[in-house]
Length: 312
Image 1: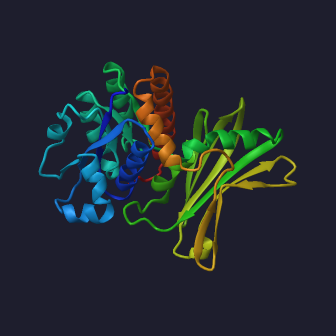
Image 2: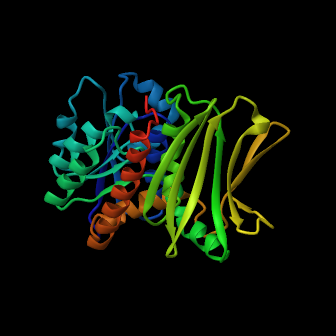
Image 3: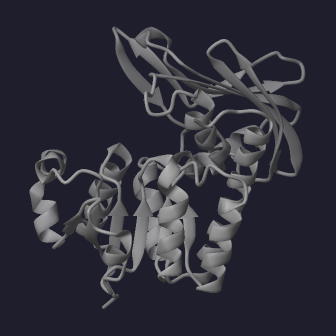
């Protein structure tokens, strides 16, 4: 019988709740995982119970902690083997660092960190302690689909990625909120060349390695209150510009927002990522893959910051 992996979830906001529900779903599917503890900012337990079926907390024997408890107290629990960091971005580095230093595997939400050099420290801590350190960028699960689609266009000239989402009061800068998602769908090395801001729209221009080709990518990111203008689209432009192949789009019909993702086997990216993290803890090959992914995505994001993209 496989050893049960105890997971501590830092954060009980939208992302944290999604991880809690996903880990419970994986447990019900036979994955040996338990939500050992939840660390939330507010002491209001009823707020958490309103968002998570209390049966989950009971079935997993989950301990609930708030800001009056130090993270060390939670992490010194020997039944906690791994940590999901799903708190606001400014807390990622500190919580990931202390978790790795105390011998816990870490899955951190995107962006990984907000300051240059911090990610390198986290990678070093994970290497020193032989721990898994990975990033929960959901769209990374669609990277093979994008690479396959791009590979069908031999004279591909550029890729355009347009994200227009509802405003996020916690992340007023669209680039900070959206760019980590976009970077994650490109499987190879990423060379960020330029950052621009046009009104309320951020534009990041970068080059991605796709099947041995260096392809320019134009990422357009912004917010809109108009539900008819919400969009998530990737388009592939050949040199003759005779056609644009579109996938991964969204549209609004009668005010209802619908999405069409890349055609492929991944129907639930969050579940795929959390499953790979839990199962990858005992897989040295996956640790190496995750380390490379974390470094690649963080270098690209930090390059955009160096070029002037605000993150606060």
